[in-house]
Each structure stands twice: as C-alpha cells, then as structure tokens.
Length: 440
Image (cartoon, rainbow, N blue to C red; front, side):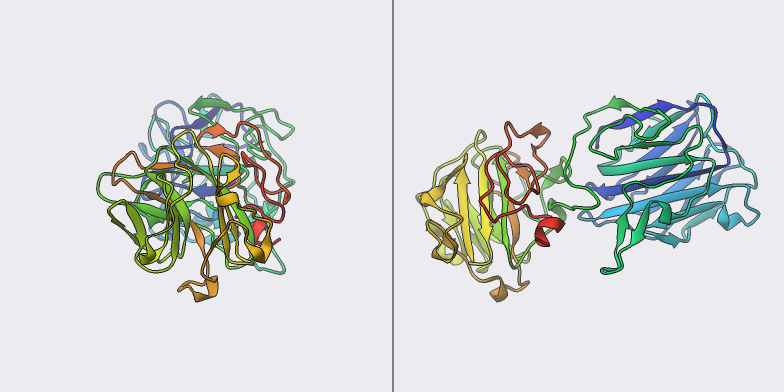
C-alpha cells in the first residue's frame, strides 16, 4: 500500500466523542512516517500513524487548540509479524488517561513519549462531511507501507481488544476473532475482512472507494503468516510487501526470508528480472563474495542458482554447471526437502537435472545439502541475491500469495497442501513456507 489509500465521506455520527478503531497490520517499509488512518475536514485532521522512529502516534487536530498528541516509545519494527492495533476513544471520561487507550496485541500500552490528552468532552473529526482515509495522510504523503486486514470502526462505543481477538490457551499468543460482534453506530464499518474488498462487510453499507494505487489481494493474513524477504537481513531495496527485491550499484546485495525451517518440505517460486537475480537457500548468518563468474558462500551455509546455469556452494564454487540459463521471462521453482536434506530447482515447471522432488532419500536429480543441524542457526531460509552489483539484479518472490510483484500467476498449479497459490504444481508432500505450513 506504499502508494495506495482508501477513502469515504462520513455521515452524521452516533458520537464524535466515543469510537473504536481496530486493524491487523503487517509492516513492510519501516523507519518513515506512515499514516494508518486520517479523518479530516480538508484543512485539519485526526490521525493515527507510525512515526519515523517506528513508534505509534495519535493526534487530534494538531493545528489548533485544544488538541491532543499522544505517542509511545514502544517500537514496532518486526516485518514478519501481524500486529493487532486498537485505538479506543471516549473523551467523556473524567480521567484523562482513559480518554484514548492504545492496545497492541491485546495489551494496553501507556502513551509514554508524548502525553497531551484530549480535553474533557473533546469532539473529534468523526463528523458529517469529513473524509475518513485509510493508508494515507490528508495530503498525498505518509502512505502506509504494508498489509492491512480486518479493519473495523465502531461509532459510539469504546471497546476492549477482546472484542476483536483473544489469547490462545495453548500458545499464549494473541489471535484474531474473525467475526467480532459489536454495535456499529452510524459511521461504523468492516472492510478488508475477506480478501481485498473495500465494500463494507457489516450491515451498514459504509463502502470505501480506492483513492489511488492498487489494492492487491494476499494470502498472507493474521491466521496464516507467509514468508517474505526480510529488510532487516539484507541490503537490497524492497517493495510489494517485501516480496520484490532490487539491487543497487554499491555491491553484491542479498536478502534472506523472514521464515525458515529445519524439518519438512517446502516450495516457493522466484521470477528474476534478469540473469543477475539469483536464488537459493541459506543459513541466515551467511555472506557471499564473487570470484570471477562464480558466486560462492563465505562459509558452507548457502546454495545459489544463478542465471548462467551454475549452482554454487561455499569455496567449492560451482557444484553444478549444467543447469538452464534463465532470464526475466522465466519462473524458478525451489523445492526444499529438509526431511532428506535435498534441494531441487525447476525452470518454468521442469526440474533441472531430471529432478524428482518426491523421490525421498533417493534424491533423484537433487542437490544434497548439509543437514540443518550442522548449521550455525540450525535451519535454512530462502535466499535471493543481486549478482551484478547493479540495479539490474533482483526479481519477485511468490511464497504462496499468488503474485509476482503486482501480477497474479497466469494459471495456478495444483497444491496438495492447500496452502498458497503458485504458478506451477507443488510437489506432493510439499507446502508453502508459512505458519500453517510449518505446523503441518
């Protein structure tokens, strides 16, 4: 949503003093000002945002007096996680600290950085004729960069987070309530509940419109988190929910993914934007160098398939040199069998070296890899790299969302695990690298 936002014009509110906003959010870009929502009258606004320090901030009509300005030192920088954020407002409360409550994953957090509370009976911008924007500031700036799901607005009630989520009795983790029950009020709505629909999925019919950009559907959701590339573990430029990477001219950049595994069988796809975009698997501590035309790992923890048909590993250099060359029109499939320590690559649905990912311990056509237990971290994670040291190196990953960048797969293949959408058939017994996939 880095250039995307939604909007609707508000009607007469149930209350301009009491309301609740709830959303599940997964960040992509960090360390920049990003608005989650803004409610404005054209010249001033109320807004809830991430500050450039990755803390949360809420302010009411900051350009006039009286106003409110609240922020927290709690930093939200995990790009692999879904956060549940709740802002619960009731300016009729006699205790100032009760007028705006912030909840993160079910826990109330104190506004401990800036604490200018709204005045008693303060009227917010939840008022007729004002514009409610999701994903952008009032002006064309501070776009939210990431994913949103199950966005609710309750007009007239200050709700607890337990309306929208609960603590899992087994794991102790905060989990989503996919069908919360609450009194909507006049301006209340529910959007982005099932897919990317901006039609109000409550009984109110308070539909939003697309203000700008493209709203892309994703399989990644609070109940099944998919791997993405990790901007904290790489030095490329990232976009499209951290599923697209581009190198720079400063060196041979790379990135690993946010999820990894030590057991199981996993499948994902990569569409390079040219021969300079490479892919494979790695221990997350790995670094790489380039020696002539051969890429190699600085320790025995990575396996890389590059555009000239080489597969490299450690100081052994090319452990295979008979794979197909690839370019920007090709899709590379990666099948990782950690039960038998085998790795397979395919090009446009055909496995290299006549590989058979279902051959088990026999490993027909496979690359035999080190057991995860011998690695420093004890697990492998997907790897991408720019092998040219220029902006021509990069590509798009499909970890199961069904997209390469903003382009959907042409015709989804079969998927025995039922998790994720891929261009080509997923081998029997393999699944997407996601939280549900890891728990199969």
